[in-house]
Image (cartoon, rainbow, N blue to C red; front, side):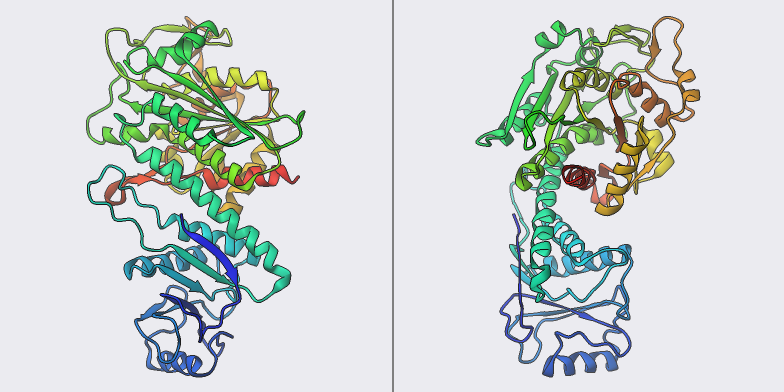
Length: 493
């Protein structure tokens, strides 16, 4: 894992593989560009090699009398605060250059760069997260492994008053990046490796040796005793047994009510009897990214030792077709006692989640948040930029929305109105598991809301944000940043 720390850096004498220095447009010059270094930057600007506009960059393999092996100049605008998008782009530019030259370490002199509406600690935290996240490589199953060369980052700070806040931001960013890396790794593993049993073992491994984190795993026999007929209807067609994994983090007061995170863990989704088209079906290994994100969040809050109690639940199953598989038209009985007509076996995520949401009642939770790659309809509605956010409490919904903005891991509030519930009517059971094509993401959330009436609840549909397709196919680690930010704010509220 990338080591990140802060200290006062002298641009001329710092020995590092790459020194990163901002260049401003106009007359402003970085305070770090003194003497010969300032003259060099001025010459490069006059020559037109770099203007200093956001998005500009210039890598010099050698620069005069400085001790650093390389000098990376990055455009920082006219000195006014950058937008958040510009700052993210700048960080990605830095990461791209560092990895391209295989730099083992780097020193960042970017403390002069401001971001609209954000403080220096936020800038440091986001830099730590983005640069550490850029080091992730999925080579677990490759013969030739090529890990990132970058091992160490140093962030310049000369303001001792801000040192503590900066260090806290760097630690937070690093912890979130670690959680994202775990979520990405699990998401990228194929379904023949990452089974429900494998996810349970990863949870147990995460808890090993940690005093305030424990794990228990409910097997199918125990789920039958609890009458979790909905969850078990999904695993009925698979040789892989379902698992309900419960992680219990005790960081708060003994009697403080916990926040419960429930992750959808469908380790492979064929669609069941309503089998999916073959094209792109390999991406259905990502259907457990909700559960993976819960594990990533639990790792991050353990690293940060947040002062609150959190329950992490992974509702894990494999959705396969065989002679025992649930069929369209079958009616199953959930743990809550509600009966469900299964119209579409490819709408299985809500079937595993509803029993987990009922099980969550026993913890008398302060809030319950489920995270699921639930509907293609959410991708159509919001694309790949924002997760869909639903809540039965406006306060909880707004807290999650704000956390997404703060963490640059955005979610967008969607309606959860009674009118949509009408689409879930069944003539044969208490509820149907789908409500037709119209507003598919909304009716999926409405289905889950029926099982979350006894506590404050929110639902994150991450079908559009949990992974990327195409040439850069892979799990993203979202919404780990959003959830960690929410829990940090909740812990200190």
